[in-house]
Length: 152
Image 1 (cartoon, rainbow, N blue to C red):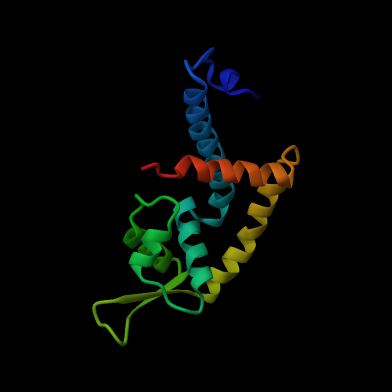
Image 2 (tube, rainbow, N blue to C red):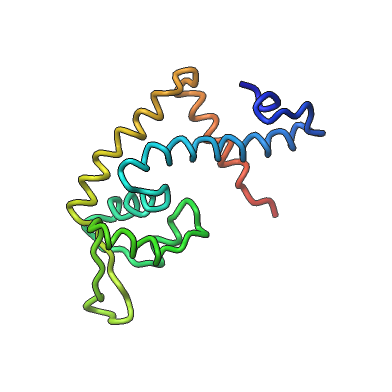
């Protein structure tokens, strides 16, 4: 459905304004879709993101700083998210042996198993949009990258 129909707006003034609104609307729409699929597994989008980062690091521990800099939503409170995952038994946290001020965070076997379960959610989400070819998906990704380019 066209953006204009989705949000009941006839015009946006400029093509760039329409693009910006469309990117924000579509990003929120996709997040809502994934969040609703993660909810039965007891995970928020941000918690799922932290687990994915930790799986990518596994078996090497990660620090809160590393998690924070790699998160999709960098305004999230990584400490609070790790605490929630710790309560669920999905991560462990311990003091680094070389630097006592540093805390090491590692995904647990239970966390890895949960991510394996949720991997099919991402695959299902990808397969839900057959109207987008792999080439178009690459193009869209490239356009998103281009949006974030900094001009000096």
